[in-house]
Length: 274
Image (cartoon, rainbow, N blue to C red; front, side, top):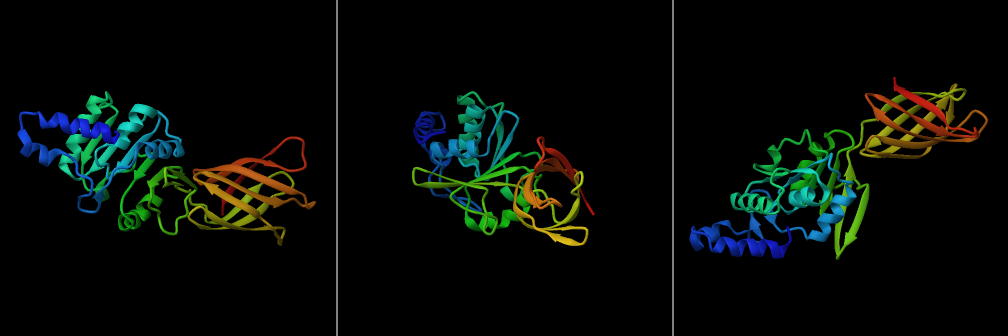
């Protein structure tokens, strides 16, 4: 919800039978202090860009931690067709959010829960939206990293320390970040591919990978390793020295996909953790 809409809603509440005292308690105030944060709204343009960055679709559940006046869940529901939940501790902001969702016809898709954001159930989230302080981001990082691989996390302005973002955007002088929760690929894997089977040892820091290869007791270079959620890419070399580019997915403790080498058609490959 934009600033103008918020102000209009506040003006409407001013004429309510509850009077000016109720208005003072209900209207959101920029800079309003909560338990773990201070409420400052995210501009509509940034909301749009963040949700685009996360590739939000009607199949997604967007959870906004510290949802303020509800503008991100409402925008996700109204413009992207997603289901959305706003988690907010302040009662007046929850009231504003619910009223706005009803006014914009998305109350079925955008729900709001009065709750401490550290206690929110994120198990079903496919997208998590954040605009909260660095201290809270730091405390949330381990929990975010433990979410289902492929879950997208977007943040306005603040980062997740040593967890490098997968993408960064800038709009209207503001910065937004995207992280895709990486699958755990640490350890030794046997890569099965016709005529060029090899073993690889993967070291992982978030989505940053270092891979060492071996074939028949001899080291094989592995370069260009990249991971994005459950997707992985790397390049190794065949017995004849030709480069082979691997691309695939990580699922149920297995990796599989297609590789491109000297053949006319790509070769399928599969890897199992030893």
